[in-house]
Length: 282
Ligand SMILES: Nc1nc2c(ncn2[C@@H]2O[C@H](COP(=O)(O)OP(=O)(O)OP(=O)(O)O)[C@@H](O)[C@H]2O)c(=O)[nH]1
Ligand SMILES: [Mg+2]
Image 1: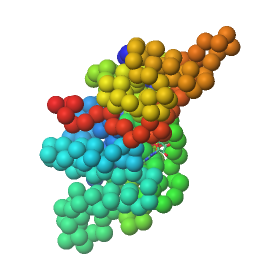
Image 2: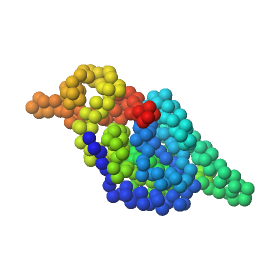
Image 3: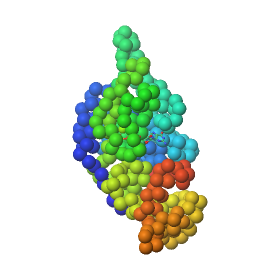
Image 4: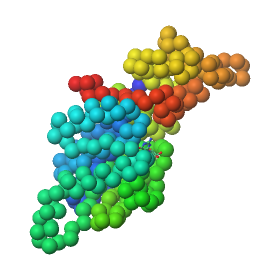
């Protein structure tokens, strides 16, 4: 199943980011803990080559701790500055500011020696729905940016000034023109980085079933009492029957079951499930 979504606002956002990067000291690159590899956008290569980057693995509350630790180890081994947080939980986000000062240490020190009280500026980038605007709100302890449970909420750039002289630039989440692989596209769709309306959600749910049966056997049985044998469609039908999703004529409503399954996955009602590990990526 091929996933493709690159609306006009993303193309415009990319052009703007290429301009705005000149005005910032560094980048905060927000990744989704469920798919840290797939949420790295190959089209940001030119941006990350220009400034120091702080990689923030966000939404860590949605996966097991050891999965996050494995990714942190991988990123750090590759020489990347990375940390893991949940923007929606307590003061977790404040770690980002400490790390941001750290990656700009030399610049801050140079300015201090010159007697300049320098305010850091960072651009927050990432795939859609990874939690960029939520992170900024957590850091400014307010609701300065609009957030939402779907991709493409932020439509244009927005500066937010924090106490202590740091300014953050929120940017619209952007995907790439074409996905590097089918799996990457699927993972991005599972985590809600792709607008559901442009995806066949029933087909997507069959891919999710395939993944779960292979990598997390027992999950679907535990949640729905559905036997995990047969084709993904047969399993989806079983889920519909178990959940009582029936059409007027008495047939199972697989489309409704598909939506419920995807929603259950996103809300961790199937458990904390990471989609990819560093080993998968070789
Ligand atoms: N569970 C969980 N949800 C989070 C976390 N951070 C953000 N979210 C949720 O993820 C959804 C998307 O958050 P946004 O901040 O709007 O994401 P964004 O990256 O700005 O999205 P775009 O502007 O569309 O690119 C919202 O429903 C947030 O509440 C987190 O750490 N954990
Ligand atoms: Mg946003």
